[in-house]
Image 1 (cartoon, one colour):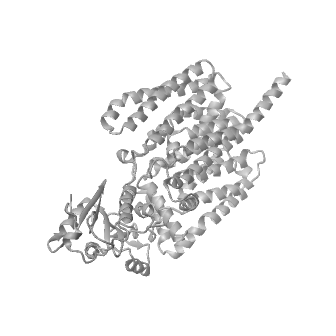
Image 2 (cartoon, rainbow, N blue to C red):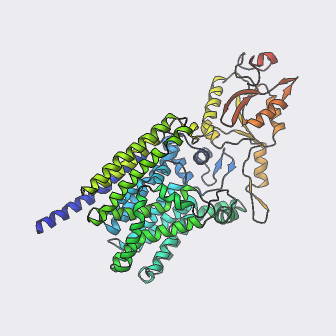
Image 3 (spheres, one colour):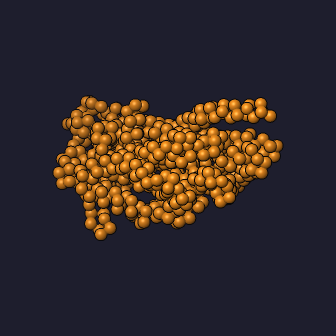
Length: 615
């Protein structure tokens, strides 16, 4: 018996050594798979990429801008810094734009492992990391170039520091200092929402478990001090340089986002009641029982056990209440509670590997996967009637088959007491269709409405700029008229002239007064440069300069307006070039031009395509 116990202890130590490396290897493979296959989606991914490109081009790392000059204060700069750094190292491409999010997802998975290992052992951490990785919403957001996954990573590592301070082998209060650092970085990623996912539930947990005396006051003060040192300097500097900006951050971007409908993201309070279970399939089936079990152990277990099991429960509940009460809601806002749910499920699966009673959890996971297969088959007629993309049908079919086959295998494995095999099959059954979908949607972005028109327009413009190089005396100039695509300068790798474009120059306070982001001198400098918004008259003047070819991006109504309005000697001046989605590309010269290096001096008939000015 003694030898068996010693052998089991050695096996456990060996598993503790290889588990984090296996988890990291699996996560790297999953998160990097086809990461750059799909083009950036509009408007979010393209906006972050455009601002990061502009930051890299201007060298101004304090002021986020797009198109090199237009200020953009919606978010703090850390995500832009990460993305611009990725561009500098890996080149300006869609894959490099997503690398920061993928690395943040990897950090979140490893952080969940550390929390699970600290509280319950390496197997709980390993299983919790796999559960998080194989969650549909987490997988999807890890492949998006935006702020949500970096925020999630900083939330997780702030919690890592709290848990290590409370339950680690060396329970030093210095972990609070490091936690303040991660919290400050999270605040520099997305602002005050970081505190709602970390400080708020931590304080609630401390109050519920009566840990004030155990922690003491100084660790909290030290954490707050480090947090302020990391989080505040950028806000202080840019607010000093831009009067009125502090009110924009506090009032418009924080208070109004939480309490008003001004951002047009209003959803009912029960929005996340259905979204969280959908994004956490099939693992969500274990969450209610694990919360109930945690509460039972919290009441009837030992004091140490009570302190450990309540951590993910309080974390998840407080975050869920907060995001449900805020007026502005998006699907990605619930991401910071997914690590807590993964820890609950990871602990449940760990217990399932040891006890016959808990094996029913794995059985239920298999049943849910079978239900997902049935739902996929039931929705097939609706999908096939709507879908015009063969790959979407293929993704649907593979997902249904994976859920059916692997769900059946999970049920069989759990019935035969192969719980570990069943849990592994659930992970595989989720990751396989998710990874296949990530690969197959590439090339179908337009049909699925998840791409962006800016990339295709940029390709059309670049093709003509290369073809017409030297043909026009003053070159080929791209222009946006009454339609502003932030991504167009990023894809063209050059600034684009804007006329009457919808660019944010100010914000409106609650009392109706407007506060400008620019000083009078800055506005005059913009007007003197290539950024002009005096509209139709300016475009008409530019169209008449025949030594230069304009390639104008606009919407269909505006195109129809200028085509009928702009004439010269009774002849139209506007030529249709191409159309991408709701945008039209037109020019003051026909697409086919006969002539030498410059068209200056050619007759009107020579300058016009025989096909006419419009389709």
